[in-house]
Image (cartoon, rainbow, N blue to C red; front, side):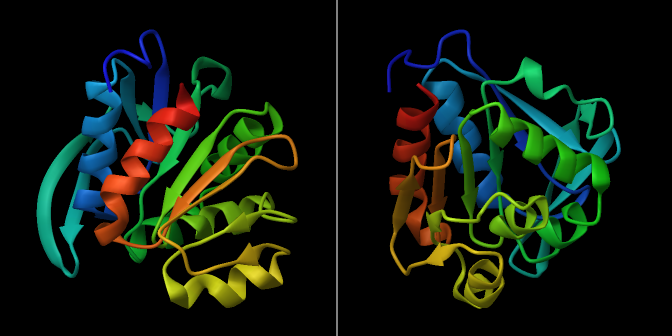
Length: 183
């Protein structure tokens, strides 16, 4: 992962509380290692409280709000998981609209674990093959997606690339796949 992402700006879209820490930090580091610029976007500017499963983890600084985020400024988006994180995000109209616009512009989107809940809310999984934490499979199928239980799934249909993974154990493969997709 030399400098495949030089000049690329990647949005990391999270709620201000509830993101699974390793699902934020591992892809973030992969984007940086590939020469890209990750940007943390949340409903409110400032502190993002990450979690390690159900325990509080580190905090991170969101520099852009979902209301102020311009999809045109980004080359792709990462949706980390954590149960609470995407549940909060799917109730934030600006976050949902951001995801719709990124998909509509044909830019790649990556989601892991519970992250696809935001995709379901944005209405962009119809006809897409994807994976997630197993408890989301009914939601994904009800939204018209084709859920599968695989480490990493990339679907290039319907106008945009979608890369998905199931859980933290899949992060090495997920990180590699998202760098390739964003490149």
